[in-house]
Length: 136
Image 1 (cartoon, rainbow, N blue to C red):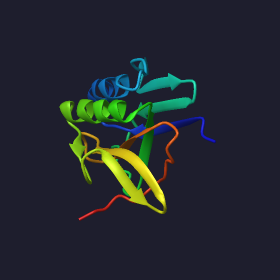
Image 2 (tube, one colour; image 1 turned 90 degrees about the horizontal axis):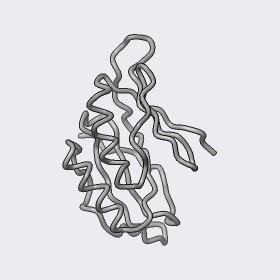
Image 3 (tube, rainbow, N blue to C red; image 1 turned 30 degrees about the horizontal axis):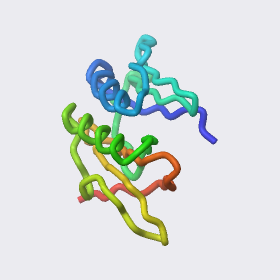
Image 4 (cartoon, helix red, strand yellow; image 1 turned 45 degrees about the vertical axis):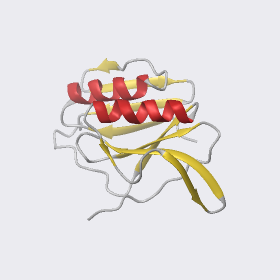
């Protein structure tokens, strides 16, 4: 359904360091830099981080989650550990099984180093869902 997802940043170098480490655990190659943007290309789509082209500051995406597919619970755990090691904040429960709506899902949640975007790693083949970020 989607060709790409792009999020904003105010510090492209820091974003590249973070997402290279995080997405590297999912076998994604380091980002390609294009002036004020970085791109992660995969067979299933593109993830990109950009400085806003209007020159304004990037702001947070309250209420959104971006889900990255992992191949196994172990890969989701490695993704989570790499995120924390590079400045992300764990949110919700530790990585593990979540039950709801008749499903069991293995999920790992992080908030990016800017604490502006919720990220989720989930093994491939498990239902991926969007969810609202809790504030407060």
